[in-house]
Amino acid sequence: MPNRPLVHFVGAGPGDPGLISVRGARCLSRADVIVYDRLVPEAILRYAKSGAERIDVGRAAPQAKDRDAIAYLLVEKQREGKRVVRLKWGDPFVFDDGGEEALFLHEHGVPFEVVPGIPAAVAVPAYAGVAVTYRGGGDTLTFIRGHEDASHDAPPVDWSSLARLDGTVVCYADRDQANVILSSLVAAGRPAAEPAALVYRGTLAGQHTITGTLGELASTAPPSPDPAIVIVGRVAGLRQHLRWFDVRPLFGQRIVVTRPREQAHEMVEALEDLGAHVIQAPSVRIVAAGDDAPLTEACADLSRFSWLVLPNTASAEAFLRVVLAAADIRQLKGVGICAIGQASVERFAQFGVRVDVPAVEYRPELLVAALSTSGPLEGSRILVPKGEGTRDLLAEVLRDAGAEVTEVPAYRTVPIALGDPREPDLYRMLLEKEIDVVAFTSASTVRDYVELYGADPLADLLGGTTVACIGPVTAEVARTYGIDTAILPEEYTIAGLIDAIVRHYASSGAETAVGS
Image (cartoon, rainbow, N blue to C red; front, side):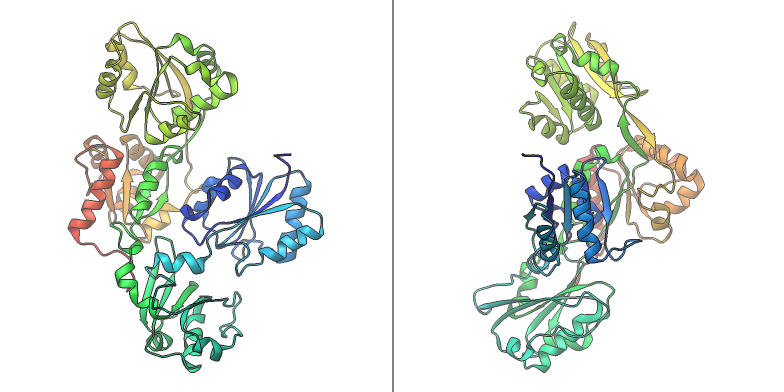
């Protein structure tokens, strides 16, 4: 039975959401219940399907659960007929209690599968520019588990034997335990002059690395509220030659993306690839249209249209949702498709459907010209799914070209209330100067923020923050509310806006949060 209820133990990796395996992401997308720990970053849950039950069982949760309670919870949810994912930081079976939980399920006759993850001891050194094995760096690689409780004692290992091994030592260290571990190695006879490194918040945009000799770090490593990965060995001395993660152009910059989540995927991914810490703080949420009947009716006979034009990702998702539920996607045969945004193009490709006119930006005149290359638009019938109650300029330009345009509501936007617990506390973050850039991608988003916070309070909050606007129209609306724009691209697209942010930091020589 392909959909039988079982429990998947899924390794989330050490933090970077992109490090979860393809199979792990697929399990998350199908799960009815996701049980996760405190170290699993919220961004990993982007792979979960809408409506999945999410249960935080970590120590930071309001009602953190002990190991037995978690195991019983997994059994209970599986016996309710739910598909359950037990999401674990790193790998479920590497320095974790995933094996104990799995054994509990076995004893209770509950089927389970394991999806390995990348252990932090492997990924974090790589992100810090340390190859844990290297020719000439020794023939051993030793992983040590640090404490996960409040104790600052060294792990109970044979430090004398470990100190004599010629190779690399990688140790998990909780909070202020790093100094104890380093000192234990020195006391056991490990050369004090050997290179070493401490990596905090590994694989995340806030990653911080401290390097030095074993002796130096044992005596001077500062206290930290964050756990660390300790690396000791000659390979640590190669960091300055191999570092790549924390020298990216936007590394450590905290950038707010104001686009709706449903449309922000490409922008968020591009900024994260450049090293930014992205905070998604949309002003609206995209939901299904109040009445699907007009779109359903249009999809029932797609063959009467010459073109399907999708102005944004939200319209593409809404169209696919309706056409897959109420019709047959094969009806698109013979209908030209124009989709704006790479995410829309990729979404159609998942169903084996090629987009005839892919576009990276919403520029009506250029889109009409592109459509016209396949033949005159005069007399052609064009379907445009759009936002409920919105005015679509592209439809007007198509009509001016002689096309018969059918506009149907495909989705609607719902304002996000201030203080919504599902959203970041942007007010506090701006007030406490925790934001480097706020990027506005439309004039309507600026107005939405003014409606949300008030004109004067918003201008005050943004006074100490760099504001980026996608184009002059958006910047002019911001100016009318007393908001100064520091970053304005030459090309008024998402890609142009990101390039302008990169140039801003390159030209200003701004320091990013890079460790030594």
